[in-house]
Length: 101
Image (cartoon, rainbow, N blue to C red; front, side):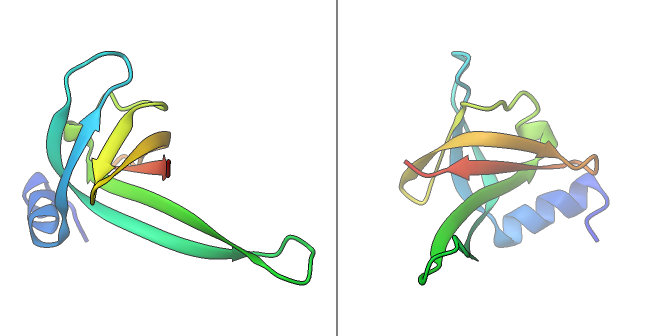
């Protein structure tokens, strides 16, 4: 369980990667460490063939992205994504659901 600021920093240091967050409101870009997940989900659309959708997201310390909002950009792994949903879990970590270009 990730309960303290020290735990959160250790988790990101061990498993995270460098990313750049740029607010759409015109603020300065910031480089931070985030956990990147690019899950794929098979969606049944009622046809003979299912569709696979990508669900990229990053998890960051809330303190690093406290003003994150829909429309911001997040560059990680050589790809720049658009933030679509900001989910602050109340434990000091925030998950940003991303949209691929």
